[in-house]
Length: 187
Image (cartoon, rainbow, N blue to C red; front, side):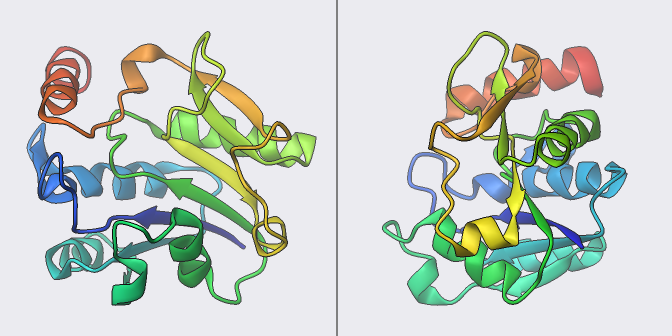
């Protein structure tokens, strides 16, 4: 089984409510759900959140809504802990899609997953020419995660992704930049 997981915590300090913020007419988290549904590989989509509005959006768009417990919804809780909670006992591969990357498209997801699958290593997308993940797509096996896998290691294969789709929204400036790109290219 290949599960797509979207971690959408409510407590953003720099851009409050960012996962529900409308970009090109849709809440940001919905773009991740829609592109995951377009992926050739993802069998199931789980949205993990402590925000009931985000969970309602997940239900409305055909994803599994998973209420994240309070201890995994703090500023100090790690994405890995929340991801492990989301996948539970599932076996197979996991594709982590951050809702703050709404410009990512299904081709980016599939390219990253294909790299992971053919090379048998964890993979992450990175802006073309960059040596760090852009946060848009991470792929690995559930076993690798359970064994303590971490995408920040040198064992991760970086998969190039165009700069125009590599915007990670954490601030109002990032949001405005992404909105302009949507208006120019995707809307």
